[in-house]
Length: 346
Image 1 (tube, rainbow, N blue to C red):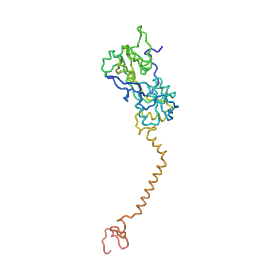
Image 2 (cartoon, rainbow, N blue to C red):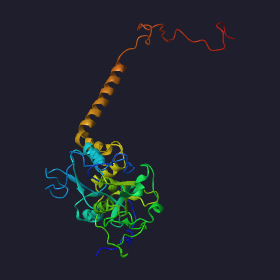
Image 3 (cartoon, rainbow, N blue to C red):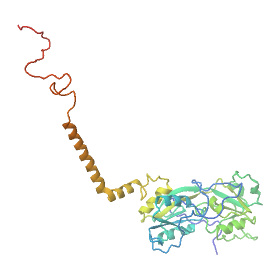
């Protein structure tokens, strides 16, 4: 038996990471738009990014080159960051691995993934995390529900669904530490019903107009149906997403990914693609050549200076040398002391 609808599980220790998911399709015409602060929509990962299933050992792609595995949860869309990775690190294959939200810790601890775009919070004693954005909660309901009469840009509150059965999926990511609005779904005799196992099944349930569901917007869009719509829940819990990785494995490639998700440019990146790394590689590869080149420049400058000293400068020599107005300072000419006139002395 599964637990009743409103039995909240204890919250995990705090910290914060991010995520964006893959799936097919986007919002239906006229429905509220938006997924996260980055504006990414659910979609299949971009071409050119490896999917799971490589044959190489940990950290090595099937082709024999280096590899980095990035896990992502349903609702997360890593395509944008994967594209930047491909531009900056073309020699490191990025493999995308989709996992359920609850499976992120196990995937990271077992080495199935090097980092993950996952739901927050996480255990900060084991994982490091960088919050990326918070997803807006929405209420999903049948197009035959009374709320469907609202305009697409109108929002609803918990008071609007206070009398509705609210279906919470077994893979819920919103209500571990928050009270569930509405009433618990029950059978005709008033006995609470078990939770529906998955988000997809919950969406199918509300399509029958037997209640509503509260989900992060990305999951509502991921599991969209023609007979189900949604509106933003103004006072519902947000769904934070972040970049998560094992605290003991903050590698150079993890640092590179941190720079990418934080929006650092290639010139400010502290990883393999950054200027410091490139300068170090250049110095190691061509240090001797650069030193010799600098030495040659110095010698050329010194020789040029010596040449200038050996050349005569017109107009600065004595009269015998053809200088202009040259006067020899010999015994025959003396300058008149200032303040005295020529003539006999006293």
